[in-house]
Amino acid sequence: MSERDDEATELQHDPQVLQGDDDSPRQPAPPLDPYTPEPGPRPGERRAFRVLRLAFIAIAIVVAVVVYAAIR
Image 1 (tube, rainbow, N blue to C red):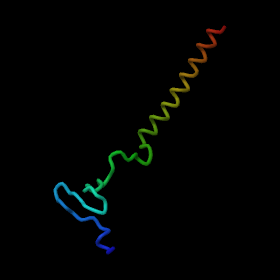
Image 2 (image 1 turned 30 degrees about the vertical axis):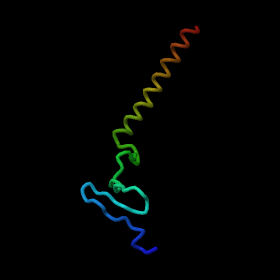
Image 3 (image 1 turned 90 degrees about the vertical axis):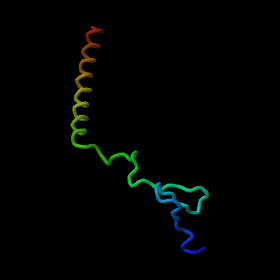
Image 4 (image 1 turned 45 degrees about the vertical axis):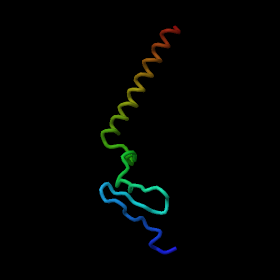
């Protein structure tokens, strides 16, 4: 098996179709997968999650007061 056999060859230019060792022709992978998640939250998202945490604390306090009033 020569070195040339391992490489994919271009069958069609637009849209680009490659032929390699497998049976079916395939298109090359896009430069960036649109479903790749971001590495981390952006600054605005960090602030939103901090506010969300504070909102859960406030809701928990309200629920505790309502439960206390209902039991009393």
